[in-house]
Image 1 (tube, rainbow, N blue to C red):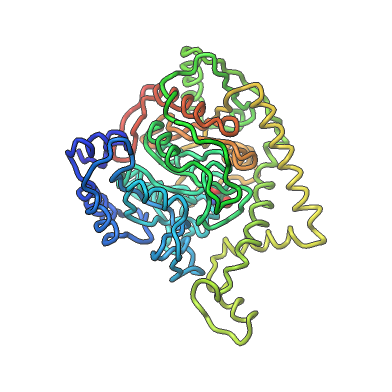
Image 2: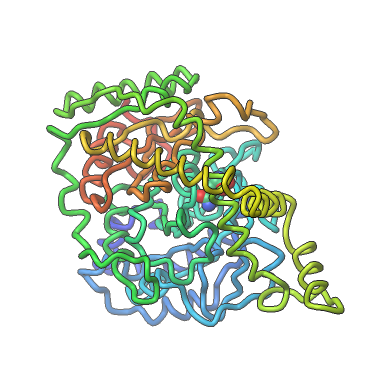
Length: 489
Ligand code: GLN
């Protein structure tokens, strides 16, 4: 056993008891990062991590992140450290400041050991589109399956026990979907709960800082550290931060769970359905009320198209600054237009260009009503329906993904409800800015599948309480591709 196989709270005890030092932990995490064969890293920060860890000599008993090694997705600005968002357009870009969350983690003496690979500029959900190529799912050593994305390298870091915590970002599902495919706890809090200062924007009305851990308790402890007002992010909330771990063990007696009928109806994997139903029975035994609720098929079918129009439009506008002059390599040219064209032509992959075409098209004056504004109206209908359900229920509870991680090349019918609804509903949490957490449900032929719990805005404490109850039912706390276990469902 290695200390890195432990959760943050277990590791914290070992650090406080001086059984292990931050330097030893950093050395081990770096060794594991260097031995990683899943293509999880953009940059391994050996010198920086060792230098910082060696200054940490006096344990801080009331600081669970003291000496904990962590990894950040490569779209978080890191001062003096190249940050590319896995895109050629940002090659060589070295930020002058740390993102707010990096600053906070450093201030609490957590040790950043690497920047993680991602789908280019956080667009995509496969872990295959970054400039370093495919990131592999650590659960499948033969490298035949997707890892999921866009926070692919961050997911690998935690699922391969390289670190117990990693930062990601979630605009549509980029932490919560890979969490399902990698057997992890993936948390996206309420929009505004965590400062996004220094996170490269993709689609700011949907962007969230999110993160991976291997237990619900660790997830709650991480939010204690990350949440809170930041004057540099005007969208960050003024609401006081709570002690998110304080009601974890209170159970779900009397809590009301809404299960969305259409999401279940569009899931065809019988084992996923059977285990999900078993979890419902177990929740009822714990005193929870469970009800199947119809969301409205048309609304759910619209999520994907709505997400696409809004996110591509916002991305097109935000990424207009990537012009080959302010950031990234200079490819030459006689005029501003030519310089920009060369940089953007060479710097972006096909997927990104396709999204900019969709974004520009929906923002053109003659198309705005039909596309951009219509998507905004659809979003508002979807959000109203979500909030209507959450006025009567504490949680919306559904499978996070319709199946285990897919094999490379496996095709899905993009117009089927399995794709449109069962595979893409997590964007609901981004549309409405609601807190949403994925936890592992079971292993199907040795591969994980997760469930997702979404709650009311700023009710993260209650969300963690519900997620902890599910974790107890599944018996999959501290699961990973290294800590494999059967589960109890
Ligand atoms: N998979 C979604 C997309 O392709 C979500 C991305 C994200 O959350 N960053 O855009």
